[in-house]
Image (cartoon, rainbow, N blue to C red):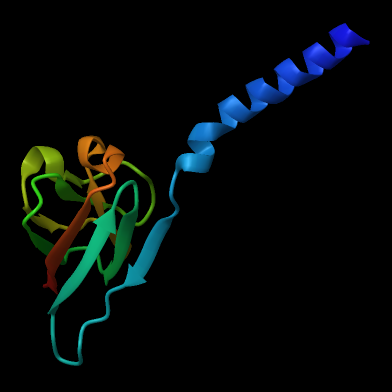
Length: 137
C-alpha cells in the first residue's frame, strides 16, 4: 500500500510539473484593426506585460501592401507579422527592426503580434507602444 501511494504521488507530481509551461503560457489577446471610412491607415496604442502578447488583426487582399511601424521606449518590445493561415512569421521584429513593409500574397486577416523578449517577460516588465498600421494598393 505504501508503494502504491508513492507511485501515485510521483505520477501526480510528474503530471503537474509537465503541465507547468502550459499553465504559465498567457493567452494571446486579439483586437481587430478597423480603418475609418476613407482611411487606409490607423495608429493603435497599447501595452504588453510579462509573457502577455497581443495580436492586431488587419484584413487585406492579395496584392496590397501592409506597412507597420512600432514606436516604444522599451528595447525589449517587438512585433511579428503572421499570415492569415499558419504560424511562420513573414516578419520578425527582433531580427529585422521596428518597421515592416511587404506586398501580400494571400487575402485574409494578417496578424501583427506584439510581445516582449524573454529577458523582459521573465522580469514582468511592461512596455507601452504605438503601431502605425496601413494597407494600400
